[in-house]
Image (cartoon, rainbow, N blue to C red; front, side, top):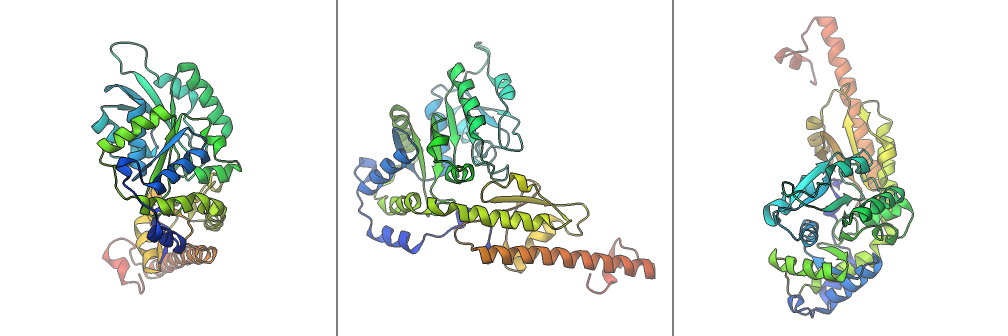
Length: 374
């Protein structure tokens, strides 16, 4: 199978497996696992923050970060309506932290317009929840992997600083965003108060994420990690591949971006596919089938699977994500499978239509299936 469902399906490299087997370990709950400590120190330095903490998942990372920023139950965090925190994290900040989410519309490029953010900030009024945090996302999953521009992030930081609001970045794929922008990752992370990023997506580690920020903030995150059940023991076996994901995997992300653009441009050549190639900044490709297409996404996805290509339904269309377990040749192969199946479906639809016109056969109901090959 050519698995393009997500970059979460990546398997640890041979070097990662070796590092796991040989990892020096201790008890991380006691704070004496040397491999975890090295990972946290390296991660903090790479994103230019005072401290960092290794957590089991990006969801726990975002949840603990939001709760660490929002000290008061009944406070409110502003998020985009297409953000991962709002869409895919089970409303944990509300259920477990008593923190409300105030959503604002997300632009196609992943930005949260400053005018919308300003309207979302609550007045200092006893009748209202207290606005305590703004969360942004880059690269932006549901916006096709868009990387927020530095110009936008600078303007957001200035706006937030004026209001005394911290900004948390869900940077699950922030290293992809940095590569897309052609900058060191610190050019992005210096513009936010805190950041969460995944080691287990494009960076290819088998598990784990990092939360980074000021030392007092990370101390609160550490306590929350324990509360949420994320305190682990000899976890150096998981931190070891995380170290390699930072030192090695970050160097090859451009390959994934190139493969995603190859897919996007190839799909754009098909008249039945609706895709915005200008929004393919990183390793995520979102596309739709036009009404003119004889297939629907519901038909197309299982048909692709029968021909050895895995993608997923996404935002009413479909999503393909490139990663280090899928080569350029495999992406080219997947593209050819997609285009061939669409071409075959179009040819078949024309054949059925021609047959119906010639023989007076209805194209609606069981009669249509009497046409050979339907």
